Length: 113
Image (cartoon, rainbow, N blue to C red):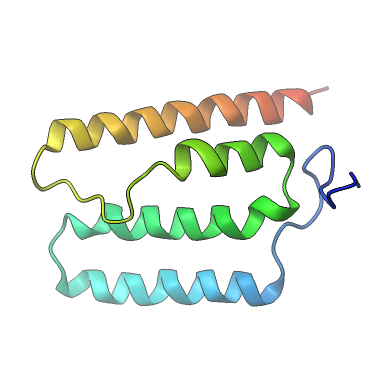
């Protein structure tokens, strides 16, 4: 463990059961709510869950993961829905996916044999 309590490699548990159950409850109830909501709220619910997960894991994650969570993921507006400018919204999601792909490549590439 580093001085800040993080695992230097990012390995090891980053969620406790209470936090995991809170996220699970959000996902299940969001699925139910989505049945009665407009389709554009689906991505909003998923991004909200991603931000909650990010906030929960950041304190115990590697520095690189904490940086991703505090950077590109945190930059997503809380109420981002594709109503006004769909192309801009999709471009923002594409950029977030590229940033995540870059982080995952670096993270898992480090552990490759």
